Image (tube, rainbow over the protein chains, first blue to last red):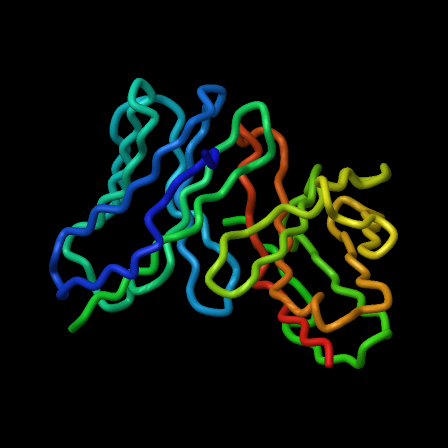
Length: 109
Length: 117
């Protein structure tokens, strides 16, 4: 089993939809959880950074961590075409940063 | 926010030549820099971790004699792909982190696309 599992998609939604992106992990030593957005042929851009279980909100983005289930989510409200990108979850604990494979999201106008 | 630059953004070279990629933290001093490789539709794979003034730590399976890393200052790290071959063609991305931001939050450069003919 891979340390971090993420559905690669692709995921296609209409503009204005709520998007839910998820990752599961197996290493209980992971303590910090991040979501990165990567546009095509660009480096990843840090979107959200969380530590504890619970929700963290930033504008249209909400990151959710459930350490008991080893499950993290990123919700995007009122999705826009400019949100079309690959979203990578990443986590760190007693290892260097470990990335999920990324979920490719397309928001259709 | 923290800005990381890479140069060049893309490079095409002949098989057998060496290519140097620079990674710079522009507005902060990076205690640690990381080099990743990303193949199409794949996630980022960590190649090595480097701290300023010390030897890089390479991940299993990464040839340290082929991928030379120099972290000469707190704002500059270089990756040299020696005797590049077509299978080295990939998207190379660096990241930098600094202390005081919790768990080493990494800020990524824009990447360098290497094509070896």
